Amino acid sequence: DTSGLSLIFTLIAVLSSVFMFAVMGYAGVKPYIGELKFPNEKPHESRWYLWIGPALLGLLSIVLGVFPSLVQLDVLISKAVSSQIGSTFAIHLSLWHGFNLALILSIITIALGLLLYLNRNLLLKIMNSIKPINILLPSKWYDWIFNSTLSFAEIQTRIIQNGHLRIYLATIIGMFVVLGGFSFIYYNDPQSVVYALEISYQRFLDHINLFDIIIGLIILTSSAFVLRAEGRLTAIAGLGVSGAMIALLFIINGAPDLAMTQLAIETLTVILFVFVLYKLPRFGRHSTNAERTFDFILALSGGILMSLIIIYVSSYDMISPELREYFAQTSFLQGKGKNIVNVILVDFRGLDTMGEITVLSIAAIGVFSLLRLKNNGGNN
Image (cartoon, rainbow, N blue to C red):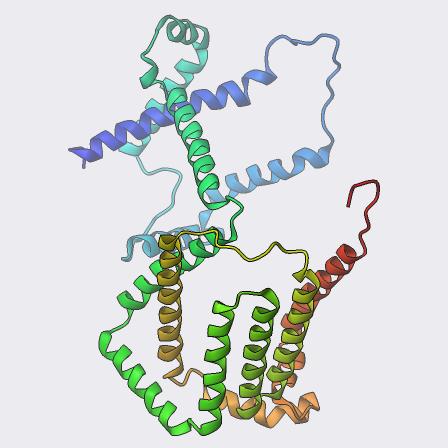
């Protein structure tokens, strides 16, 4: 088809190939022929192991071009093309297909490219005599795009990477609400979401007991206490109470290993907070009522979205029964451990756990090094 856009794209492809042929001659042939520009230098040929690789590739391309059936190149290329266009497409490889359009365009490309290569000086004089409008120069467009990218990066850095933790958290939560909320609404049927809420509510009624209600009320009370606290020590105490109650929930629901981890983290967090407590400035309001309202709406949106996602996911049984039975039957026999969770972490996914332990060890070494720093001549 030589009409319409096909003809235009064919002409563009031919012109591009002509210039590429000329550039190949300027960069790949011209530097190695002609008079030596630096007579004081004594160039020498490279060792054989530097050119043996390109020579083998060139020889292999010639052999496969003459005998493509050796590795069934036509089949491989046909499969690749068919996967791209979505339908079966057969290709026949051969060095000679007769005088066709592709051969004629190749001859024209080589002839024009060779003509440009041989008349490089004349082409340079013509180009230097022309004074194009700056807006038409590709180099000007490249400089404009490059400088605009730098300016945009500078503006973005000033807005996002401004050193305020509040902006960092607002950006992370805001993107989660926008992208996560859009994906949750777009990819889920409203009826399935309602069904998940009904299932979760029924499970809540079936498993709720008095201890859960009391612990939940204590967590809510301590969280509100933290938000309204006027002193840091009081806020830290409220956080400790919330963490301890969460650990108690883990124990009630049969997860003592998680409870131990939660208690260890809460204890360590309280100790670290107490250490830095007296180094921090006094409490003060550094945001306006509008900013605090925006933070409240953003935090509430993030919490609601995360709750919906957890409810939706937990309403379906995502774990295969066969997988549960396999770990229950083989954890003690192969891992020699009675705690299935620990056996899975240490034995069945040992490399992953080793990576996590390595990261924690490196972090611990870094914290230990920071704690050992001492002032030396006014420098930390």
